[in-house]
Image (cartoon, rainbow, N blue to C red; front, side):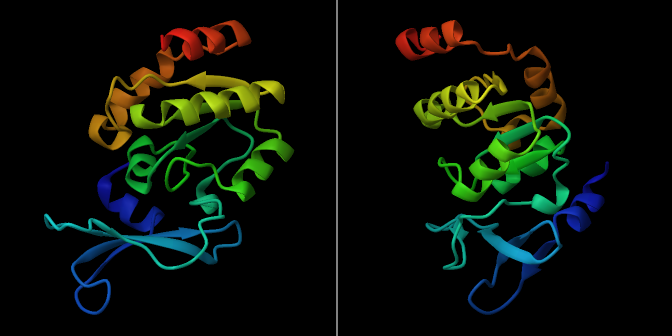
Length: 179
């Protein structure tokens, strides 16, 4: 995949004027192709990097790109998902939206890769525990204090390929010792 296809796949645009002037706009669409959210990010060094609409984040971001028959990768932001490329779902922060949680529970997705930033480690462990209790295969991706968008596709893919499947013992070790 080349970068110009990312512009099409993720409906990336740019505003020159107005409320979102000077910002890259990344659109999110639901399963039917309808716009369900967008993220606006400045390309300048501004105090407010992101400006999002005052709409609910209880959505499945990039749902139109997700193959629910394949493993999914949960990441924090849209740029992380774009860098991951393969079945990545941005949770738009550190909390998994209810609609996404419901879809993951009710769907036949079996393998879930959790790739949240180090500052969201406790959240990640909580999600791992929840998915394990539901019988899902869970992988905690150790990104060594980097974001997928900083690492890039190839580097991140290496981390995913070496991620170990968690079980309750490993989860407890992470909780107790942070290892």
